[in-house]
Length: 228
Image 1 (tube, rainbow, N blue to C red):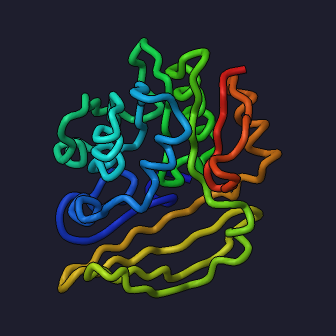
Image 2 (image 1 turned 180 degrees about the vertical axis):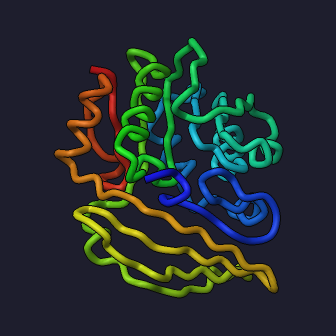
């Protein structure tokens, strides 16, 4: 299966290789994530943010006193990030030859249905995390895959978010289309993702030279790993 079968997007403005709409992502604001991350790492920590997008989390981490290197494969996304060092690269091919107190991989990127890509993401995390540092990954709690159904919600800031065409094409797999509407603009983003049960994730981390060390605030959607 090629990447366009796993994710693709439509709508006005630039669309990234993984189907994300740049114009829409520039509208998004944090929902407490930067503070949660800040509480889990040392003051002034160096952070490598993989898949930083348009800087939704980056800018708040900078404001909290961290030094951030923001990585994304979309130059259109990176153009919106101010105050951080930016690197235009895929996660798989990144080779900065330096390490960080924290390597951050959010937005459920780790749940790709491409097993080889996931293992490459984790190898990149291990290669760039300091021996006394940590990796923070964001995933959906495994049970989400069993319970999620189509929905529609108003966000309160003029956006409408819908999940449609939900299907489960294979064991542990979920396919769906997200639809985002703002005024007369509409974007869609199709994704195919894979459920990461704890045992499976621990095995994937171990293969990359990492080990699961816990969850942020007990939330199983926020995984903390450290070098083995």
